[in-house]
Image 1 (tube, one colour):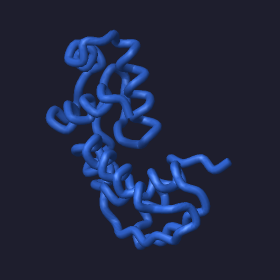
Image 2 (cartoon, rainbow, N blue to C red; image 1 turned 180 degrees about the vertical axis):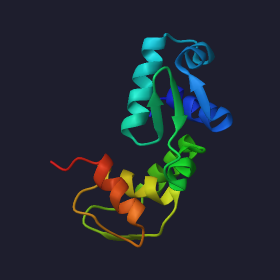
Image 3 (cartoon, rainbow, N blue to C red; image 1 turned 90 degrees about the vertical axis):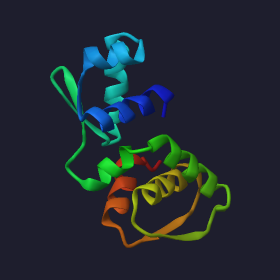
Length: 132
């Protein structure tokens, strides 16, 4: 995720709802660039776009928790994955950081079996990772 997208998530965490124009000014980029960032964040399920503005995805508390300090959680997930090797079986509990760990594993490792008690994590991996 781009640094600017992390800043957008931080801004939405603080302000709950921001217009595209406001975000463009805050990030010092064009509205077209902000719309592209918002599209990417929408595809990840982190925000909801409406006409002219964006909000955090409040449909699930976990989505809110994912957006909060996303960049730090993503760094943790990458660090955790350094100790995981192809072909292993991993157990992952529920939680926003754990969801990012599971996604990072699914995207960067091969033949990993993930066991989780979290329906959110299972669904999150399914939605955001494309198996080829």
